[in-house]
Length: 75
Image: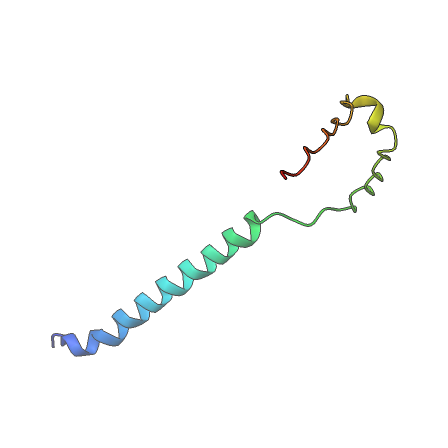
């Protein structure tokens, strides 16, 4: 007696479900293996910034501009 197409339908769905679950599990495994791990030890502390107290000696400066006297108001 030949099998009908309706009888093989649950078997095909089961096969597709197995393939989908297998691919999802493999993808999750690749993602978990490939992601970067947390560092084993914490990074060294940052060095404090140096003071900018002597920066004026490094930057040339111009003398302040001279003020011109205002002309007298017109009569």
